[in-house]
Length: 112
Image (cartoon, rainbow, N blue to C red; front, side, top):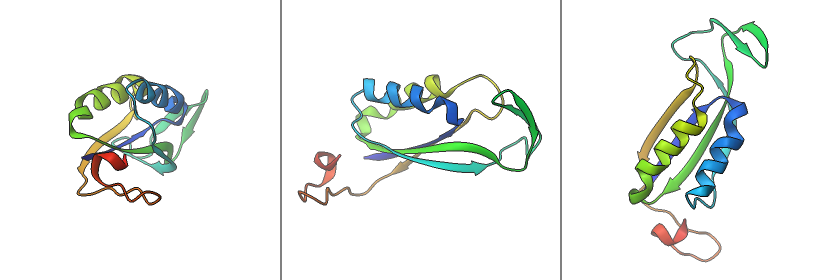
């Protein structure tokens, strides 16, 4: 199993969610976060206005998937979250040793 963590622009959340649900993903975690990358707080246009900020608003999603789905999920996120402009975000893939569904006690892929 792998955890895919993606950080991207907030207005792309619905597109990313739709892309993942079309692949059969049944759940994900979403967090509102702030951060900066290479631009290090340079001005950026956000919702039509130009801002000079140190930390830009982003959305972070986390989803645990079976190893066989990794490439499809990465491509779906990349296409749905991309704007081809600076600050589009990053995707990280991490190993997951175990998953357990609290309600039923199911473990492994069955717990997803």
